[in-house]
Image 1: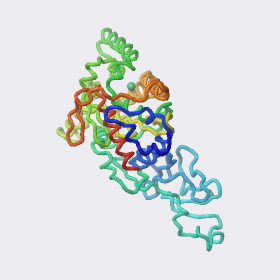
Image 2: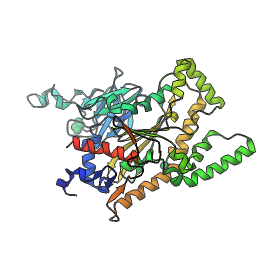
Image 3: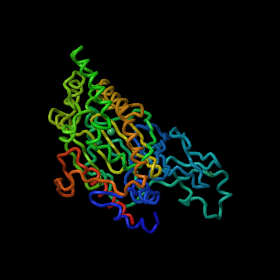
Image 4: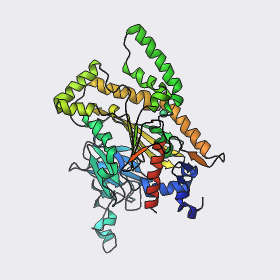
Amino acid sequence: MLREDINHLSRYVEPDRVRREVYTDPGIFELEMQRIHEKVWIYCGHESQVPKAGDYYTVQIGRQPMLMVRGSDGGISVLYNRCPHRGNMMCGDRSGNAGEFFRCSYHAWTFKHDGRLRSIPMGDAAYAGTRYAKGNPDCDMKRAARVENYRGFVFASLSSSGPSLKEFLGEGIVAFDDMCDRAPAGEVEVVPNCFRVIQHSNWKLFMENQIDALHPSVTHQSTGIAAGRVERRLKEQQGSVPLYYHYLSAFASSFEQWDSVQTINYPQGHGILKAYMGLRPQDKDTLEHEALLKQAYGEQKAEEYLSRSIHHVLVYPYLSVQSPLQQLRCLRPISPDKTLSEIWHFRLKGAPEAIYRRSLWYYNLVNSPATMINADDLENWTKGQWGLQSDGGDWVSFHRDHGGDRVENGVAYSNHGTSEVVMRSQFAAWSRYMQEGA
Ligand code: FES
Ligand SMILES: [Fe+2]
């Protein structure tokens, strides 16, 4: 695509369809990184990933290598992972402990945990009278423009202006509230290590898919049917079946069942798919968990928390959270046809071990790279990218139920889970970001 054409992005997105280049064009991808991913609030990690002073965890924000680090005062900073001397990457490992300060492996400049320069070998003499004399902030490691922590989830924005974290998250904030409120202690902790998967497809294909309720009964049909068969047989033989069979069998629900689920689509591109497969079973583990929540919050609050109807919350443009099962997937786009996804899950502080096992089952059975469910999706996204790179057509269709949504204050409500309002709403947000950044 010619550079000058990129400025006419309105040609690429119409209310009910988009041009294929938005998934394939390197120029558009670069603009997305500048105008979206390097501007909005990006999830860096959970504070429990860096419990001790000097602990750091590296993270990609847009095209920028960053690191999240715990200071000796307990605060968390997010810094560019780059030495201000000659540009070396400061931390080559994914995570670790920097000790009392960062020390560059090239010429031993050292930095405090908040990025401020601490020392340069024989620096006073060598730099006296130069522009890099003591006190010049160019000698510090550069910090992310803004950092905020919401209930333990740490976000950074590389832009000094723009909405606050709470404004950015909007109604999507329920993802974090729902997760934390399910913990009797009111907070979660990360289970160390995540799965990392490189998807050979554009980041937007993943975001569209997450609350696309038409695809599960097709894409995951074989898995769902096979699991359903075993589930029924066990039920006949033993009378009861472990809950996790249902995690898989539910995928093979009929089109009509999936269509009966509601979606809410927000102007920021965020979305909620309501309902949930077996949210409140009445087994002994769930009842024990509910009793602890009632003890912690009182009957009324606990009931309010437990009756939230959420299957999935999307925080556009990069997060997919299944809060009732403490699952979080985070995208780190690499190129138009390559996207890294981090797949995390969390432990509810103060909840019974069995509730954690439930989350682990879901993590392993549905979201991990080893499952059939994730593999089904990965195949679709790769094939999606291949198809979009072909000359077999210029447009991608989002016409399903177009015109049939109820829109109030910019929020589109659909009573059809299979409606493509999800994608239309995401692209409306995409266009706004891209135009505002122009
Ligand atoms: S590049 Fe870091 S000290 Fe020289
Ligand atoms: Fe899927």
